[in-house]
Length: 421
Image (cartoon, rainbow, N blue to C red; front, top):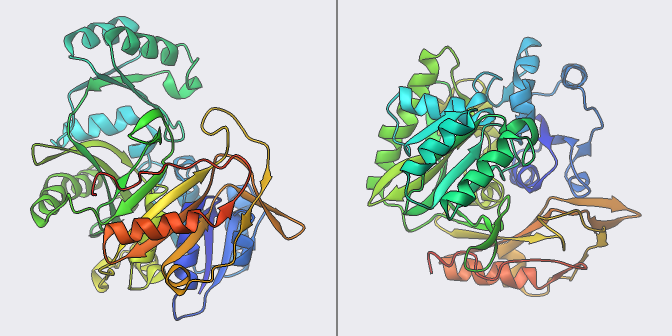
């Protein structure tokens, strides 16, 4: 099958890697891809979505998979479907579940899906008034897309009010913060869950835990994610059932009632409070780095799952998972997440140990290629993934692989998966 993957990060690399490992042979294209995806397929330089759809038609692309949120919110799925192309992802209207946190919170309230109490407004007086009714810490969210960084957990009321003011003024997140949500802080443990949806049916993948903070012990600023592991032992069948019955099913039914059936990845950020799952947020694509650990755990065909979801036939397939665990450790550049970093050559040691060769791999993200050398371009550069029969074994292998990757200024956390261990 000819497959086009939109995006340039570790998420897209890991999807492509899983597809390349299938028994069936596939021809892969990336838009735009990165310096390492060239080893898996062909990178395209076509930024206009209409031109990209024309390319897909002319080259008989049988499936397009959209990785990041921005093309979805911009309506790339609508453009491709108008040309009769098969594409995996939600429509522009359905993508508002991530594109607007205000839309998402109001949707949750309308369909009685458990979420934190909140107010959404562009009035600083209203937001301040609601803030005063809450017990600190207080959660402040920008309405629009902020690359995973638009959520502030304020420790004091004054800190919350400062964040509100900076968002509304455009100082923090530009137009994305022109409308703000203030909500109660939930005290529990956080999960990432992913449902592959075709509008009617869905397949729930294994629950993962992400590590958002930059530093060990969950300290420092929020990032796009510094590591993740799956499946988490913090989830049992009882909790999975509550998520299915109280969150996923009413969401799919609600989206159909809204006239915007949801197709694609429904990423549910969940806080578990006293055994009850509360919806923190929806995203409309895979999390990164969660995708990097979920893909290698799938033992059935990844391309078939995406194709069946994109053609409303999920009920026709059986998705299977390995009994192993996966741990992913992000390697970030020197100045992440504060500023850009100087490109640095990446040196990867040759792997001599069979255990490491067979149970680890690297998913590349913020990299470029020049004269057949890979360079860390900045941001989150790559993810070292380890597999094992226990979380500890998977984690230890991931860190052994980290020790074989070198570039100037590399930055990692040393405690990924500590919640489970």
